[in-house]
Image (cartoon, rainbow, N blue to C red; front, side, top):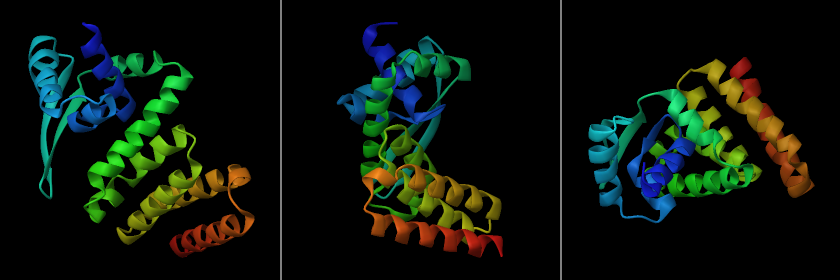
Length: 187
């Protein structure tokens, strides 16, 4: 593959097996329309490396969804990144996703686990904890108690591991809130 197409797929591999053309374009500072054309025409129809999954409408925004045809290809691309590139791409991916979903609060809570993963991988614990907590609250409202417990436990573990960059008072308050939410789910 030409370098530009491989770079686009490498960025897409950071988002995951299923990815969004607009997010890939924003992370690469590329034209969204051109990215969609490359993914649909060259990488889907010609090389059969990805498949178009449809368009998701969010407010006045359209998000073009794609999926790697084989998970091993996605994993190979992701594993080809060095640790420094991964951190930078996860940060850029989290920021791009935040910007895309910020106008629709319900959508943001639906992608909160994904945002948490990107910010955790980027080493931005404060944002990761906030999104894990949001994901836990959403799961609790949907009566997905096991999922809620997992999100709250991950948030708590991450919060306690990242205590050095949090003021003690804020860390203590957040820990208490997460434990309270966790207790509500377990009752």
